[in-house]
Image 1 (tube, rainbow, N blue to C red):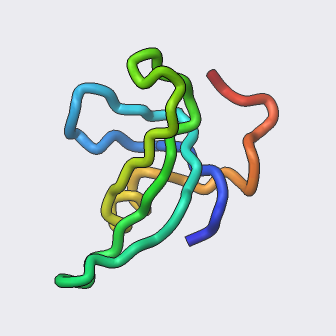
Image 2 (cartoon, rainbow, N blue to C red):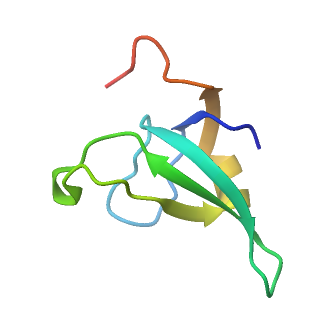
Length: 82
C-alpha cells in the first residue's frame, strides 16, 4: 500500500452514501490478530457538519479498499475536485 491520498472510484453497495469522487487519507494497514485479515484505516478528507469537523477514522478490508479506491498521490491534487 502506498501512503498518501486516495479517491473513491467505486461504491460499495452498502450504506446510504457512496462517497464516489471524494478524497481519503490512507493512515495505516493492520491485521486481525485472530484470523489474519488485513484492514485499511483511512480518514475522509471532507467536512461533515454532523461530525463537527472532528477526525473520523474509518476501517475497511484491504481487499475492498483496493477495489474501491485509486491512488492520487502523496498530497492533495491541484485543483481539488468538489
